[in-house]
Length: 171
Image 1 (cartoon, rainbow, N blue to C red):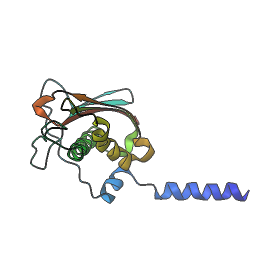
Image 2: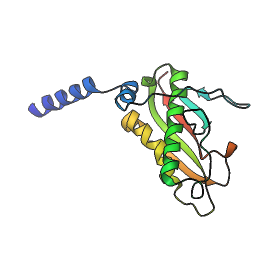
Image 3: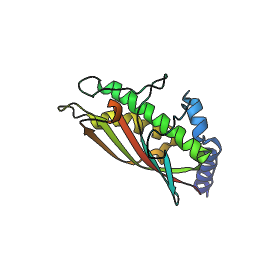
Image 4: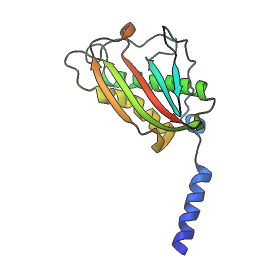
């Protein structure tokens, strides 16, 4: 009985102190960027049932300019990691705009990361970790996801990375 009571108290404490994604962003001193308009014949997100499919986005600096270049040639793994992190923040901004509240996110399901890579660059997973680490920091276990991290010889506008995502949400 004591064990059951102790477990109930721990669970109640955990639930009482659980932070919303927005509270977690504030704690991490992260402000989401403005979402630029979709640049082409597509939309930023499509909701089907309880899944939202987010179109690929690239990293933009504080001036709204793309971070460009090939990993392993123009950019280091660390610079690529930061670029992927910026894409994650932009995708969170898209989600917030689409949902109104990030609390509606049930789970980050799948992340597809594309890295603009020199022919001999093989650290694509380390680069896309910048994206994945943000999702886990903001959503905890719900941010852990299936993932693909691949290298490509070119990306639109010579972007360093492009990342798309599938998210399960509450209806």
